[in-house]
Image (cartoon, rainbow, N blue to C red; front, side, top):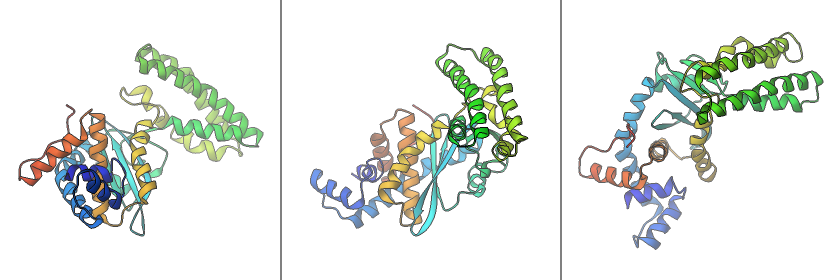
Length: 302
């Protein structure tokens, strides 16, 4: 029942009042919103060791997909961060969207590859792969701009970008080997960098092209490093559940509530990726916690 209540408030996005109604109607267990707060705290304590174990592994990952979305903690603005590794997903609710969160969770010496957008808090950590899905949207904005110079640059950049994605789909489905992919990416890379350089020296497009040209190596990590993708869609997909939850709940009321949410999101998304039954895992974890036994790990996929 404790595990079920925890899932009602996160996986099924029910308010405490409505979760109490479900317990009363279906399980014939008298419940109140206040009691659900108590159950929430019990679930958060039970899953804390498993989530803490995942947190210690973030700094050792070769590739991480990272994204963040705004939320609320009481009256304060906050952010839900997601870190997608190969076998698990970790969430953190923080009052900051700055590099201090990355410093806390990754450490200053992180040496892996980070999939991200072009936000500057990522720039001091690891090797970056900027998201081509974001870039494609930016190129479309240039195409839609009334300025003819920007339109031309947008069209010029969009053509090789579409070729890039067509080649990547073949890599993903196994019909194009990595060596051939790298070879066929050379003219595409040269074309895109040529257009960025042209835009760099045009006053109308300099602002758009400067960052992309100055840090152009961050566009091509996926070509050189196996296991890295051109987009950060994996992190955005993992964050979707948290975004829907935030729109329905308007955030949390306290730090304690944020700890419950980040831990439950971590459990739910990691179990989904590992094809585990999240209710069975959570039930066994709560039972182990109640009896003083070691709780289950989420570190390795079954």
